[in-house]
Length: 634
Image 1: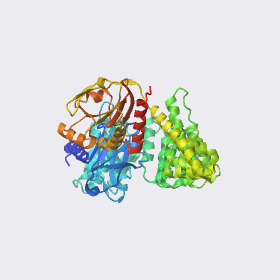
Image 2 (image 1 turned 120 degrees about the horizontal axis):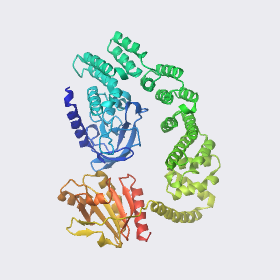
Image 3 (image 1 turned 90 degrees about the vertical axis):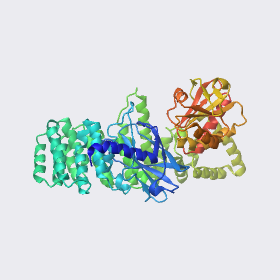
Image 4 (image 1 turned 135 degrees about the vertical axis):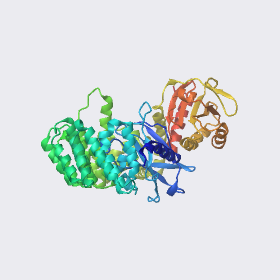
């Protein structure tokens, strides 16, 4: 392939992928949420139950466990919609495929290239590793094999070359993988027969150009590549050069750790680790090496060896976040519960050993959340082993430090079962009532509580009175939860033309509660969110002090198309036109759909952005917020 064509082909492939997958925002950033709309193609045409299967990726050193995740996709017309949370750091993009839940063998992987979602910086530039990291998914993870995808090494070569061209400083991270990709490309017969000479020339070019900065990892990688190319003499020369590199330098230590991480053979990896800690026992990178070996044990499902290995390491070399991720994965998959409990407890211990500055409230909150997460995994592991009393005690540690509305309904169900199994239901009942008021229960939990209360109170009449009083408390508490989210900021004035030709201004609505819903015809999540919002609107149809306005913004379609969609889905409510986005920008709308409530005094009191597939929760929260404002909340 002509490498000069690669950027053009990349743009074409992304454009083709976007025909099936659209997402907002169009330039997503870290620590955000991506709302996607997927139109089924190929094997998924006609499927009614589809999920997104995705992998977050970054630099080669950050690929770590590289576990795939799933996100629900809700059918909306001929498409499916959903959301994916982007973590705060160590990620440059997402690769997404779509899979039938009814027939998992049916997968749309975009012709083996997956659907890319590239992350951007604050300035809107594509992040480093967003392109090269896609090839690393093929080279360094099991994601393609999980989805039965045969890697396209010619495509991977193009991705690596683009990354290095865009960000030359990443060349040391990618050069060896680029050569490996070219080698595999040649072995698959995807390129000219002289691929060996090309690979040899690339290795020599890198070693020559980076003579002053070579690391042991570079030379080990070169030796490995020479061996694969059947050049034993060149491989030995590369190994001989390793002794000339300063092993105690920061770069050399990093390189040795990278070599440990990259070694595919677990026995060799452990031997390399033992050699590393023997020669550099106080290396600041020992913890990274520990994590690399631990991950290898975990991936190989050698859980007892993992526990033995981690138990021998001192606290400074223990990464509690990694331990927690291991424990969480085991609990999620329902295997290795004794090891999951040990790992979770080890994580709790390690978190506790790491001091938090008294002035850093954000870190303190994050640490407390991490400890609660580890406690939850430990409790779940104990629960799955039928160790109900230790599980209940661990659960008690969680609920005493967690607001009821932040608890997990499934966890609350397990707590109640543990309480019943250990004859401690009376002592747990007060907590159960708080989670009932917070609407954090499952159907099974509510049924069990009703049965238990019926027997306890003496009959169904007493239970009915109890439930009526409890319902009043629940309604008040739900409104309080919504009111906690209220803001208080001036609403920018506006005057917009409506589809019916009339002008509508905020000033003309003074004294009313105004509900603004920002939407666009191309936005599938907007249209999917309309039914619950219209249900709320209809409940206020005869309330003159509440006015719904549907603001069409960020629009690409003609006015006639907007009119058709509005007539079919929105009906009689005013539809305002914001073609230049001035109103959306003035109100700080960053994501569609967005709902904003303005009180009778002309102040913004409530905001909601994005789409939730929990229609009932959307309806309840919006209803409560409007009722609170209409009742005169200040």
